Length: 427
Image (cartoon, rainbow, N blue to C red; front, side, top):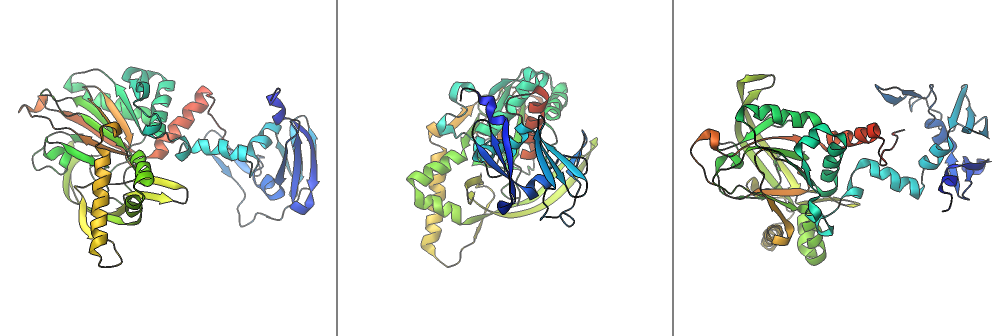
């Protein structure tokens, strides 16, 4: 279009009572219908909405709202569309607002769905994910100091499912300070039965396989034993193994699912149809919140069911699997040994695809590095490493979990603050 701004300028408005709408014609020749009830409900006047820095919310209740409301009059002026409503309410809808908010407009729908930072923004690894040009790596110090870098780091997790901060080694007395500075930049953590934060290091009487041995950990998502597993996981490497090994391994579960759906549809359907049961029973000892020198024991007995591939009407939304916590129970409608065999064969195929070299992202987290990834999309593993026998020189990580709401909220706030192109008004 030679003059793109014309699409935001109104040429005329007319009443279409048979459709209970006002028709707007824009100067680019396009037409839009704006329903009476929607215009009244979405009016940003002070009788309809409270809008402040502290909150935004609709004032009228659905119980009292007249869904059959009709405008008393309307007109076009330099500010936009002016509508007078019953109840002494006068609404002003700017021309740009009308064009960018019209219900049912394909243009509006495609734009608005981007604000969710969900399925529409996901890029599968096979389509040029994080291995391409190392786009998933960022500098730790820049992350702390530059809001645009923080934005790009978190957006990378939304798009590719993973992002890494490259830092520098520091003394053991600074571990908590450095780790907490990362958390504060991102936002609220999501606590689990292991507390708000946790340590990953060799422990006697360990409550988790990551603490129990130094052998290779298989590909898994964390906490399939929970009905609502944490959505994102962060690990900060305080001290890497001095004896080598302990590499971080990741695979895009969404890419594996798509590959199975195309090449192995029978196995894909089995993992989409039949839930597996996962159990986690034991206890953990961690610091009491607010008291670094006081510990408490937390006993737990977690049981949950998950389909390996969780889908809805629009496609795949979650991948969940952990062989360590997988129980004996198969939720089947019949005593069918061949179905059991097919379930196991499908899980075996899924795992084999995870370990194909072209599907894996394997790298070393060095001392001072951090990785954040989508726990309900990306499976992770760890290569074996050796112990030294001196606790302060052993491999040591600190970790926590986040919700997507926290991550995406931070992205939207930075977009607003920095006036980035992707920013959208919430109302």
